[in-house]
Length: 110
Image: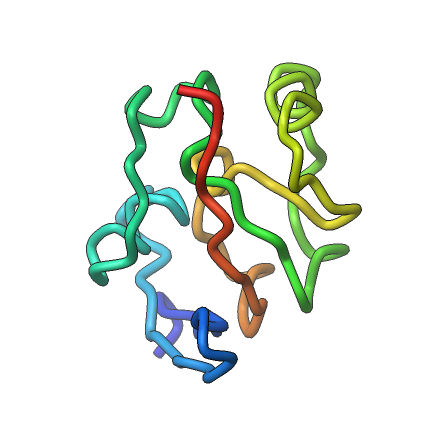
């Protein structure tokens, strides 16, 4: 379907779950993952202030929108930051994200 994409999520045990995500509802990746029962606190409600929605983009990082200064500042406070870290609250689902693979890291600065 033209208004859906596939999001691959690597679980803690290394298994991969493929989820179909809508692109026509203005959802963030964080909202989508929470809606699919992933353990994301989202304490700040998606304002890039807590980093509890921290994900590592294992595949498709270059397909994502540019990281903002605010998002980078929040990520820079994390001990488990990687070169492919993003805040899932700052990523609106869109066609360019089709087939990305993410791993939920969470445990932000609350």
